[in-house]
Amino acid sequence: MAAMINAGVNSSLPDPLRNAVPAATPSPAPDEEQASPNGPYMAAELIIAALSVVGNLLVCAAVGLDRKLRTVTNYFLVSLAVADVCVGAVAIPCAILTGVGLPRDNLPLCLVMLSVLIMLTQSSIFSLLAVAVERYVAIFMPFRYQALMTPRNAVLVIVVTWLLAFLIGLVPLMGWHKTPPPGSSGHCFFVLIVDMAYMVYFNFFACVLAPLVVMFLIYARIFATVKRQLRRIEAERGGGGGGGGGAGEMKTASSLFLVLFLFTACWIPLHVINCFLLLCPSCPVPFELLLTAIILSHANSVINPFLYACKMKAFRDAFKAILTCCRMPRRHRHTQTKNISAPHLSLRGHDEPLCDCEFSNPCG
Image 1: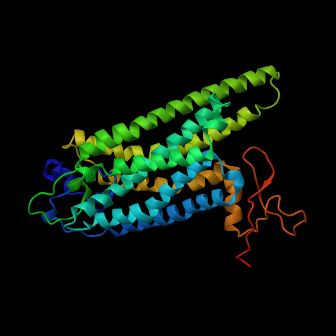
Image 2: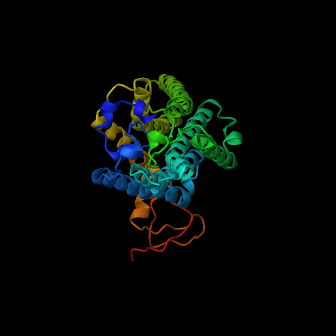
Image 3: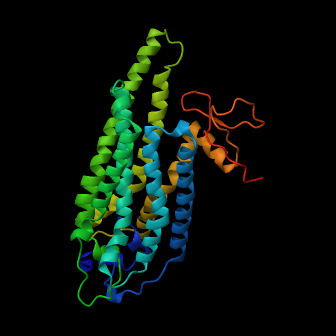
């Protein structure tokens, strides 16, 4: 199968391009290949992995320590953060290993390692879809929100999304993959093992593009509806004052939409290249473009913690408290005045302590 892919690209592509998932890179026949690591690429991947793990663990810690942040929306964001932690801790190391053709002569393990990032990407998409649906219910079904969007239901949705993502990622293990050519060296390279038809028609069109379209439509309707409500409120008040809760909903929806937009911007280029190579195998793909798309897709796992810190005051204050080793008092547990004050968080202007637990300051 690899011989069918553009030979013009083969001569210009180094080994690391085979470790991307989804991979859009052609490769020479494995018996002609001398797998060797690429230092700059591996360094970039390791930096991304470290930042992804640290940043997203910070998100999980913030939600876990602060009751104010324990909302249904944030449960789904934690699911997204867990997927990004796994990208840094598991998927990128697997990508580096498969980039040098490891493991060799072990097709099942090779397929598992190549499928890891597919699973995690799919889990991220489903988490983003859950966030969009939750916002839709909050705006258009406010009287049923408390009954539908309970913490228990949120956990159930998260479990289902991870199971679905796991099954989608395991499709290659169930038989939809290429068979290594006879006499091959047994290197574990993406394009020699995973069927690009699976990546384009099933993974991209059905499991990635379709949910993204649904999410963009949901946010489009949310923005249109909230803007209309804000204009009506402003007209009723004679142009004075803000929109109150409507303005808050708009700000929250805008921040969450930005998460979705950046995810799309980071992943779509690599999927488009996959489509390009499948539908036009004789067309050359510049090495620089391919490498940029791969790094960009992995770097998406680093973005969200910075986005939350910039756009959401509650997360920003929680991050500051954790990173500066602040002491956080119990909420409504003690009547006496403490000799320290903890940061206060609010997404909607409430004045509440960071969490109901107490930390000793490890910084001394």
